Image (cartoon, rainbow, N blue to C red; front, side, top):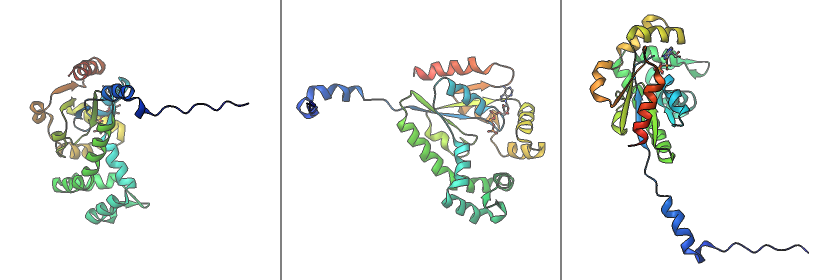
Amino acid sequence: MKKIPFPEKSHSTYPHKINKPILSKIVTPALKIGLTGGIGSGKTTVSEVFKKLGVPVFNSDDFGKQLLQHNTNIINQVVQEFGDTIIDNKKINTRKLASIVFSDKDKIQTLNEIIHPHVINQFEQLAQKTKKKYIIKESAILFESNSYKKVNKIILVRAPLDIRMKRVCDRDNRTKEEVEKIIRNQINDTKLLKRVDYIINNNNELLTPQIIKIDKILSNI
Ligand code: ATP
C-alpha cells in the first residue's frame, strides 16, 4: 500500500521559523557606478574585465540601440523627428541617424530625450534587482544625458585622442572625419577630471590592475 506523505506544516504555526530568514534577507541596495569616457576610450573593454570579476554591467548605448531597432513607439517618434531618410529596409539605420545628430547638439539632445527615460528606467530596475555590492552603468553620454546625477560614483576611462581615433577607425571602419565629428560633440576628458571619482588610463598602463584596485574600493564601501 502506498504511504500518503504528511502535508508540510504551514509556516504560520511556526512563527519562530520564519522570523530568522526574513531578518537575514534585509539587504542594502547596490551602489550605482557610472562608467564613462569618450568614443574609443575603452569603456567596453574595461566593462569586460569588471564582468569577469562578477560585476553586473548595463551598457546604456547598446540598450539605446536595441530600443531604436525594436521599440515601435520610439521608432515612430524618432522618424517623426528626423525624417524617414534614416530608414533602410524598414529599420532605422543608426549610422545615418548618427550622421544627422552628431552635426547638431540640439538634435543629440532631442534624440536623448526620446530614448533616455527608457534607458534610465531599465538600469534602475536592474539595480534594484541585483544582489551584488555594486552595478555598473556604461555610458558614453553619462554627463550629457544627466545620468551622472543618478549614480553614486563615476569612473572615467581615458586614452589619448590619436589612439582613440585609430582604435575606432580600425574597429568600425569609419573615416577619421566621422570620428572627429563625434569627438567634437562629446565633453572633453579634461573637463570631466574634477567630476569623476576614479580614472582608468587605457594607454600604456595595464588595465586589469587598475580595475582590481577600484573593485576592491567599491566592494568595501
Ligand atoms: P565606444 O564609445 O565607441 O563604445 P569604447 O569606449 O567602448 O568605445 P572599446 O570598444 O572598448 O571603446 O575600445 C575601442 C577599440 O579599441 C576596440 O576595438 C578595442 O578592442 C580596442 N581597445 C581598447 N582598449 C585597448 C587596449 N588597451 N589595447 C588595444 N586595443 C584596445
